Length: 180
Image (cartoon, rainbow, N blue to C red; front, top):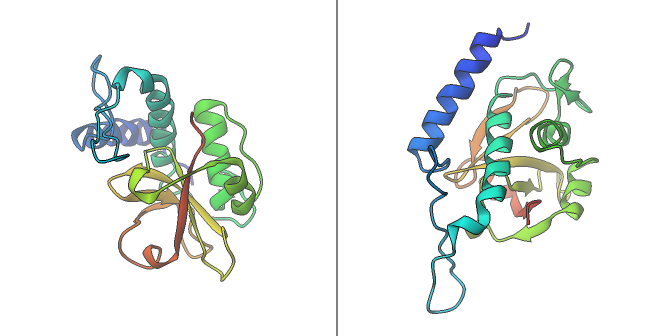
């Protein structure tokens, strides 16, 4: 059973409001919040104007991923109608939201990105986990506020989780970015 267009639109609108209120998404014509660099002892504020295009793409990824919450899981699934697995969800979101082709397993996706320390994750980055005693065996999309969206397993649906508590916190490996 699929959600009505009204439900999807309401979800996107409410997600935008919530993420904006939390400071994850910028509102209106204002630029994104300045990014504080933790490099060196004299941390400086980066020029927010240089990352506007990146933030716009990242925001599109986050909103699109949030629109898939409650989508059913299917191993090997690559579209919401049939169901999604973790890497299929990531590939689908990036392709549909920012026309970026990311393909393959979670491990394949990890090889395509640039490593990002957990303390520097930005919305739209991918987060990787060791969930089966196998490196990079699970992937999700970081949405900010130490949370991510993912397609967990055959017993669940696409949902959000915390990076800092719960089952996934102990299995976090690293983040990777796909935006320059």
